[in-house]
Image 1 (cartoon, rainbow, N blue to C red):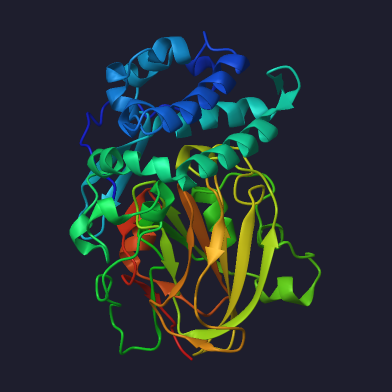
Image 2 (cartoon, helix red, strand yellow):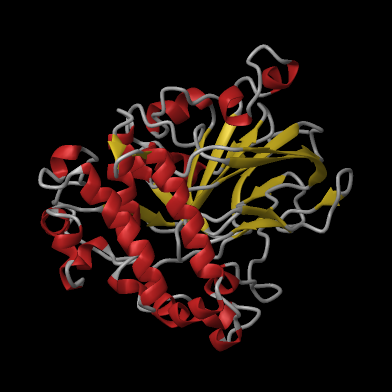
Amino acid sequence: MASLHPVNINKPIEKIHPDNLPDATHDDLANGLTNIVIQSSEDPDVSTHIHAHMHFLSKVPGIHALVPGIEKLAAEYHVGNFVIVRGSEEPFFESMPLYARIGMHLLFYGREQVKILGTKRIEELLKEQSIKQGQIYDSPQSVQSIPSFVETYSIQTDELLEPDISKYKSFNDFFTRKLKPGARPVEKEDDYLNICSAADCRLTVYPTVDLAKQFWVKGRHFDIPNLLNLSPSSPQAQTYKDASLAIFRLAPADYHRFHSPIDGVIGETETIPGQCYTVNPQAVNEPGFDVFTANGRSILYLKHAPTGLPVAFVAIGALLVGSVIWTGGQKKGESIKRGEELGYFAYGGSTVVVVFPKGVIEFDSDLWTHSQKPIETLVKVGYSIGKTPSA
C-alpha cells in the first residue's frame, strides 16, 4: 500500500476548479504535464517530479515556474484523499501525486473542449503523454527510477517474488511485480459463497447503481449499459438491472495485478477504446465528469459458480496507464477460483469496477458503512468483501 500521512483534518478538502489555479493557463497545465513526463526519463528520483506528493511540493525545485500557483494551493489545502484502513475507524490522508493533480485540472478544462498548445485538445494530450510515459518506463534505463519509487511509497519488497529490485529489467517490470505464493491468502476460502477483493486497493461498494451515483460516481452518463458498452434494451443489459458495484481503485504504489473475486467460469472479453482521464476520487466525485464510461477499458465476463449469473469484471485504464493485460492461464469455458490472477495494469493508477447482478452479493457491513460517508477502505487481494446471500 502507499504510504499514509496524517494531516490536520480541519483543513478543507480542495475541490477541482480552475479558480484553484487562477494564475495557470491551459498551456501552463499542458506544458506542466509534458515536462514532468520528460523529467521522468531524465531524472531517476520520481519524488522530485512525476510522483512528487502534493503536500511536500515546496521541496520540488522550480515547481512554481512549472505550474504557477500550484505550490500555494498545496500549502493551503488538502490535495489528496482520506481513506480508512480496514479494521480501523480512523481516517488517514493520502497525498495526491503531482501528475494526478495536473491531470484533473486538465480534465476540468477539457469539459469545454478548450484547445491547447495550438491545435491539440485535452484528450489528445492525455493520450499522447500516457503512451509516452509507458514507453519511458518500458526502457532499460528506467530501472534507475525503481529505488526512489520504492522509497517514496514505502513499498514492502520482502513480500515480492523477486525482492531484489536490481533484478528487474525496467520500471514497468517492477511496477507489474509478482508476489510470493501465499502473500495474499483468500479469507473464508472454504466458503464458496464468499466473495473477495480483486486488488490491493481503496474500495467503495454500492448495492445499487443509484446509490453509487448518490454517494460516489457523479458522471452524468454513468450507468451499466454505458459502462459495459451495451444497448440499454438488450437482454444482456437487463441482466444487470439493479446490479451491485464494487469499485477497486489502485494507487500508483499498489501491487498492480488483479485477481478473481469469485469462483466461476471464464467467459467473453471485450476491449473498449476511450480516454485517459485520471481516476482519482476527486475526479470521479465531480459532477459532470464521465470518467469510468469515457476511459478505455477491458471487460471480462465471469459466470458466478453458485448462482450461474454473469459477473462483469471491468478493468479501466487511466492517466499515464500503458495498458490492461489479461494473464490468467484459464481460457474461455475453464474454471477459476477466488484469488487466482486475471491480469495486470501497466504503469499508472487504475480502477477495476466489478458489476454483480442482483442477488449475487451482499456486501460486508463495514465496507457499506464507509462507502456511505463516503470514504474509501484500504483492502488487499483476498480480503472478504461480501457473500452471496443464497444460492
